[in-house]
Length: 536
Image (cartoon, rainbow, N blue to C red; front, side, top):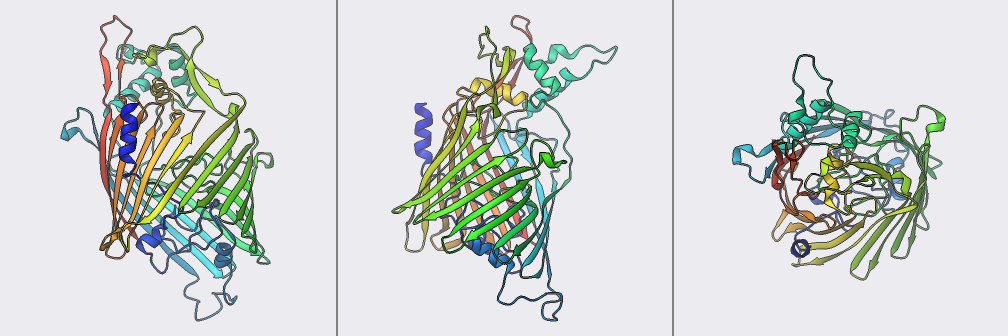
């Protein structure tokens, strides 16, 4: 723990996350004049966002306050763009983004030729229709392709999952049993893995794959009520790294990703702003629940209210879905002199969460965690997941500013020990950045360097205090040739082997005394990569 604390302090000046003062991507790099208008998140204040680049995660998010909806739907003069020669040729805008990356990961003991390589590519294409200033439609499609899809950031894990797949495959008559080459699993884990009761292993991935990111229509009612119908972007909460209150999204955001690459959610959103007070009220119909809402009884609902009280913004919301227990959220952001503070808390029924525990009457063998008899348990009572942080922005030269901050996350649904990490990994319920009980992130962000305003530097350090383990990462982003963005990063993993950010193990392939070999999974040491992004 002493080592982790020292690492965390050293990373404090070399860390990054999105902050309340952080400019948008468009403010950093500029955007094409024909890009669609971007809305800010549901948890944000009622301000008008800058025009967006066409990356689907950043394009036309349907969140926000009064002025952004009014700007999207109204104008100085209401006229049909299909009826006038002046605008007849431009009622529909087309565009998109091409995003290509190369990522390499070095694991402990790897020779140079064994360093894992992944080269994912992404193409987003959008159609933005505005026949007049009060009606708008958006369609965003996504194509992903990874020519190196066979590779894995840790080849030993591929070997492990292949062995687990062989374990679950029905035996072929006349062939020897594969049992001698399989990990020494307890009966409970063997059943969980093969039945898929907790996620299981295996599954195929389409490559290339095509997905629908957004498909929505927006209009207003008497310029007082703003309605958005369809697959759209929506986000709650004020957290920069962790968002436990983000109930509308089916998955958590990757805090290390340069962009939120999650697909949109299928929603009906009704937004009622109170402009004189800066307040906003939202109602949602939710179609993405425990299962697709193919009957009226399965349609979920959510509501949110945002209040501006002086320098403080407060948000409150709740979500109600059949088959799930009610979930409630509170978030706040405020300024205390030169320091911005923020926090959010999710109030949930403990029965929403399951985690592994050692079966009654069984002792956990930390050297052979997969051979231990375990069982799933549900939490009880009220479970509160909470995150909070602060950041400070200052000028370090006359023309250059720097933001530094920290954020803490308490997750009672996580594990207090790393011994259950390999168990959750092979059973399919491993959740990165949400697997531990206590986390701490430290970050810094520099918009432009002295006399080099086309370079952005961000530094990030995320620590799982329960393992303990962590990852420190630096990103350098260059804006060149007006529309081309070059992204580079380097990251280092540290802490206890077997922790969340240093997933390495020695797994026996047979019971003690059998003389069976051991499957050694080397822990990650460092990773680095480069990305190219261009707006079409």
